Amino acid sequence: RSGKVIFNGTSAQNIDSHSSFKHLQISGSDVSLLRAATVSGTLTIDSGKKLDINGYNLTAGTLANDGNLQLKGSETLSITTKDTDSGTITYDGTATGLAYGNAYYNLALNTPSGTMTLDADLDVNGSLTITDGTLNTGNNDINVAGNWTNNGSFVSGTGKVTFDGTSVIVTGGTGDSNDFYDVTLGGTSAAQSANAIAIDNDFEI
Image 1 (cartoon, rainbow, N blue to C red):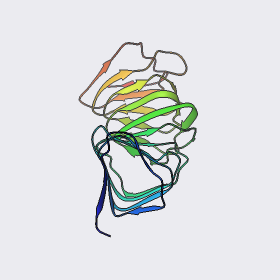
Image 2 (cartoon, rainbow, N blue to C red):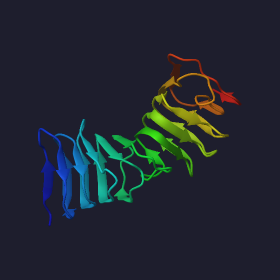
Image 3 (tube, rainbow, N blue to C red):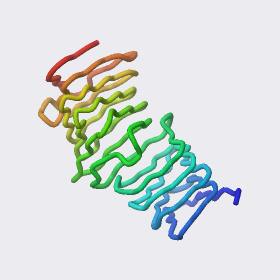
Image 4 (cartoon, helix red, strand yellow):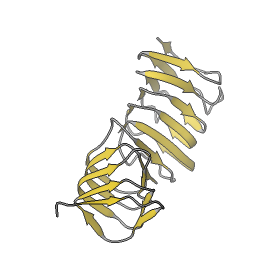
C-alpha cells in the first residue's frame, strides 16, 4: 500500500519472494535479490550500503542511490527516475551492454570475462572505474567529471574522452588496452597519477 520496508539487518539479507513494494530502503548490511522485485515508489540505498539484483529483473519508480546498486547487466532494469547525482552503479557479470543506460554518477565495471560496448555516448558525473574486464567505446564519446581509473582494459576506438570536472587519471599504462584516442580537458583540473598516458590522436586543453 503506502508503507516502506526497511532492511536494516547486521548481516547479509536476501529478498526471496514475489515482492511488490511501495517503498524500499536498504539501510543495513548488503541485500541481494533471489527473485525479481518491483518497487512502485522509491527505492533508497543508503550511503555505504549495497543492493545486488543478482541477475533478477528490477522495476522501480524512483531510485535514490547514495550507496551501490550492483547488477550483472543481463537483467531487465526499468527505473522511471534514475539517480545520476549520487551513488555507484556496479556491473559484475558478463553482459555486453549497460542495462542502466548511458548516464551515471559513479560507474564501476568488475567484469573479468566481459566486454561492455557502448551503444551511445556515455556521461559519468562522478568517477569511472574499470576494476576488471573491458570497456569498449564502440567509437562513442565519454564525458567524465570525476576520476578515471583503469585496472582492466579500455578499447578507445575513435571515441573521445572529455574530462569536464576535477579528475585524477590512472590509466594502468600506455599499452593498447590503456591508451586513449582523443582527450579533451574541459573541466576545472586534471592530474596524471602513477602511470604514463598515451593519446593516439588529439589532445585538447
